[in-house]
Image (tube, rainbow, N blue to C red; front, side, top):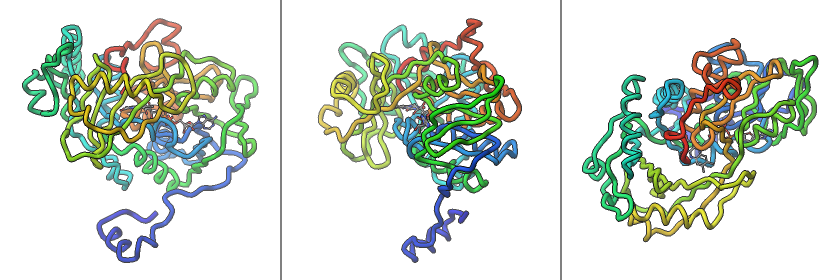
Length: 414
Ligand SMILES: Cc1cc2nc3c(=O)[nH]c(=O)nc-3n(C[C@H](O)[C@H](O)[C@H](O)COP(=O)(O)OP(=O)(O)OC[C@H]3O[C@@H](n4cnc5c(N)ncnc54)[C@H](O)[C@@H]3O)c2cc1C
């Protein structure tokens, strides 16, 4: 694979960029692989990458029914943070955030990671107390966060109205090394590295069945034929329940559409990420100048990957009180993705009742930030049978009542 470097970029600029090789191959599926990952979103691709990088397992295919990154990975609002409450969550989200810091260099692909700082506004007394508790938990977990007062909020984000009539800003939980990254680039960077290790990234190939014998997985049926495998990872976010059904078990996951929208581009006016959970909206400014705005999830289960008018209205109406300048912007486009929600708002990284079949899902509204850490843990789980980072997130927790309750940190969409 040709490395990206200053010299390569200059050389290719002079040759009208004709010399770049394909970033990844598009091979025909083989009859068998050691390991198959279903889902070429960020989590599936990162799992494959760390299987090769950390465990030397490269006889791997990553299979997707659409184009890679075409699921939630390419539809999210790209917020990266690790200020969760519970120890198990802080460990995996902080591992992930830390991996993001150097991932562009590692993958030799510019992910545009921008640790510009994330603030979660406290707009009720209840919320303020909740974030003070999280600040202290984060201090014990080694996650750098701090509760800042309203004046500091206004200094960091001058476009904010801290004296809103219904929900004044009382302060915020501030994570200075949180931020954003380019979502497609994360999928592309991992896909390129996987392909470079000889793995097969296969697009436009829906998995239609899961084969097993004597309680052990033996392969999958796809639109392009049968594929045998020894190990199978199901990493399909909103479609996890469908794939689990093919494998003969049920998951405690609900699928709903989550929506977002962007405005027309404007001059730089916001250089931090802001989440306003009470009014339920979050906002950052992209490098192109668009205001990227995250809204809510539909109130009913569905598999609809598109936006709806009532959500634009609801989200923008809620945000305008805190960000009055939004009322003068035109909206460019909106979209939706199918997110996979668990009851405790924490993910599932687990063995399943079918031996050799593993599942990684339940990231719900907040899994973009977790892609590197999740891939790291899932690869370890699949290669070694256990992973310290994944331990708390097994399916058994729902049977045993060991919930990892993140409804404060993750109960809203982000
Ligand atoms: C509007 C919106 C905003 C969000 N904002 C944020 C945010 O700011 N920060 C954050 O951390 N997270 C955010 N998220 C959540 C985040 O996007 C997801 O948690 C994360 O991208 C999930 O990645 P994934 O790889 O698990 O799933 P996906 O990227 O959805 O990949 C799953 C893949 O599985 C494939 N698939 C499904 N069924 C089959 C089949 N039968 N055969 C083969 N392939 C199949 C799909 O085509 C898809 O490509 C947001 C999500 C949405 C929708």
